[in-house]
Image 1 (cartoon, one colour):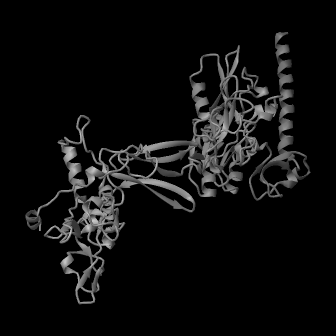
Image 2 (image 1 turned 45 degrees about the vertical axis):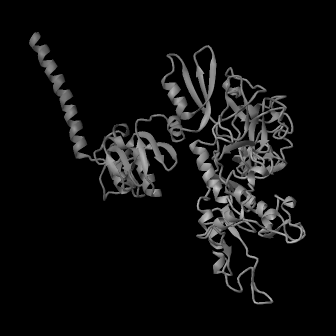
Image 3 (image 1 turned 30 degrees about the vertical axis):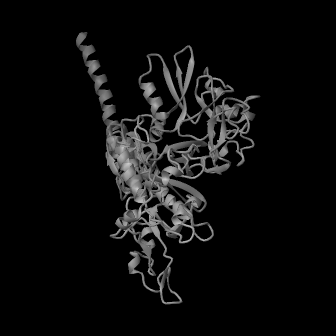
Amino acid sequence: MTKKRGMKKRKEFFFILAVLLAGILFLVLSPVNAEESSSYFCAERTTNGLWCMNVPWDEVNTNYDYTQTSCEATSFCKAGTCVNGIEGSCRPNVPEVVCNDAGGIWDERERDEISQCQLGCCYIGSGASFVTQTKCSSQSSRYSVETVFDPSIKDSDKCIASAYPEEEGACVFDDGFVRNCKRLTSAKCDTEKAGAAEGTTVEFHKGTLCTAAHLETKCIPTERTKLESERDEVFFVDSCENTANIYDASKIDPVVQDYWDYMIDKSNSCVLSSDLRNADVCGNCNYLEGSIGKRYDRGNSQMFSKAPNYGDYICADLGCEYEGEHYEHGESWCGTTSTGKDFLPGSQQFRFICDYGEIRKEEMDPFRGTICVESEVEGFRTANPRANLWRDCVSQDNQEDCEDVQERDCVWINGTGASILRDEDGNPLVINSDGKLVPIDELEYGDPGVELGPFGERIRDTIEAACVPKYPSALWFWEPNETKEDLSSENAKNAMDTCSFGNDICIVEFVKGKFFGTWDCSDNCYCLGLEDDAGKHFSERNMENEWVVNNLEVCVALGDCGISENYLEKEGRWTWEDLVEVTELKEEDFENEK
């Protein structure tokens, strides 16, 4: 019985195997009619010119590879990444043949695995963009500019902010309890972010104020104002001490929220009138137009014509007023401690500068070794110190050399008794027809003061002259404990030596009358003022005559010499009696003096 059941099983197996073999033979002996099939093929190229597409048989270009399967499963249409350096693109899932046809470089790796396809920060010119290294390189080639690629930056916002590190905005700190805010640059905000405590988030909002409603910080508008370093304008300040926009009184009561939300540049702020008549409500000062922000000073009506509506600062005029005259910012001028004439004993020169509406004073050398000189170019006045070139004035013997401004600061003085230079006998030099100082014996007919008299004699009315400092130097005559009778210090001796150039001697001759026995002046009478109708007797002398006055002019020009008032209009130590010393000479003395 068992054997029979086994035979039966073998028969059933044979039948099944026979059926399967028949099916296989049918498949082999009866091929499919592909042209009539509705199946899809992977065509390396289609009849429409497309690459690696799953299409019906009638769209397959049989000149290229094809197979009746999905393109994803083929080797000739395997997808990868196409790197196109010209376009600057990294396209994923692109078949090799398609990439090659587009001029790219095919890589079988995924895009994230290719370094040149990683996103980073591309700096080009003054800007930045968050792109791949390939795109960054293509931009460099396209615009012919140098680019820098930083793969370490993985955030678009951080990339853009890093290109403008000085651009300001609201740097918001949120510790979960309070949202605080500082007005910072993006770079400084990044630094704050790096050092923030754990659990504190830091966000940068470019061009936004800390008082912006949508930021929901603790900072709110105030009526207070401030000045910013290296800025001209007056600004509002918020409750967190952050600088807000340029002061505009119309934006605070009531609060205009847009004004307190975003930063407004100078060109879009309130307009300040050139005469500052609206300075109380607008803080848009402009240095180039003559105004700048200053702390308001109620007592300075020259600088401030009105008070600001809010805060303690206002736009003020950059110009200055000095002794009734207006000076523009940057202008400078000379001044002195003297109330009248410059270069009086004790006086000192200064340079005054109009600086941002305030007057600065700079001292010149108290001994006038430097002087202040003014000039003007197109109406703009300036004053500058320079060396006083006075020391070789007295040695000049003609006016041209004396007044050569390139060489010295001197002036030429003509007049009786003016000459400083002397001949070998001590007589003053006089001017000849060439304008040069020469000994009187060298004068010829035609020279000034030399004429032919009616009887052939020479009549001499010569002209004396001297070259003296245009800007007299200050001299140190005495120490505090010295008197005018005891000038023994080295400084006093040096001063006396300088003044001695102005010393002069005039010998006046008197002749005794034959009838009345009186002494009448006969020669050099002008030295005592005894000439013309002034009288001839010594008792009628006038010590403030032309010869004495001219000598005094020379003395004063040499420095703090002679007699004069000081810079406080106080008379000095010396008087007319000290200036002229009269000594009576006997006849034998006169002969010796000759």
